[in-house]
Each structure stands twice: as C-alpha cells, then as structure tokens.
Image (tube, rainbow, N blue to C red; front, top):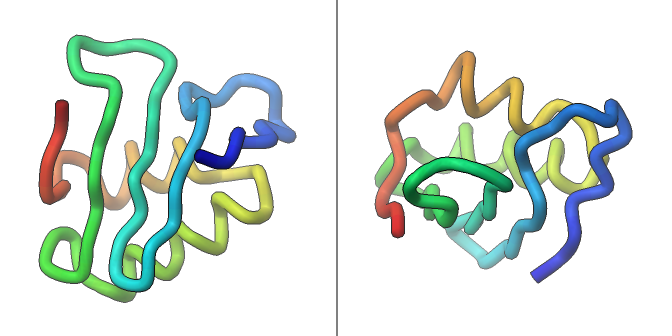
Length: 76
C-alpha cells in the first residue's frame, strides 16, 4: 500500500494500491474502509483518473464522492 499524501489536508483517503486494471483505496472512516475499483466498475477511464489523482496526492476523495460514487467493484 502507498500512503496517500493528502496535500489538501482533509481527505478521507488513507492509502491506495495500483494494479494494471484496478485501484484499491483505503478510507479513514466508514463501515467498510476498503474499496476496489476496476475496469468493469467504474471502468478504465475512471480508474486511470483515480490512479492519476492518487499519485498527485490531491483530489481523489472528491473525485470518488462526486463522480464515481457507489460504482465500485467490491468493498470490505
């Protein structure tokens, strides 16, 4: 897992792990804190955008909450 840099200072994202066709995101709070987003849900365009935002350390939580929403492959 890679720690999320959280440059904005108020993200709920703690860490992430990138794979070829997915991103696993760990959040600070919530009943389920681990979410998997992949090429099926929400699709590769969204996954690539999430990978980019994760690497930048800014905007990932906002993108998920405003664009991706509940369109995840798995949560636990």
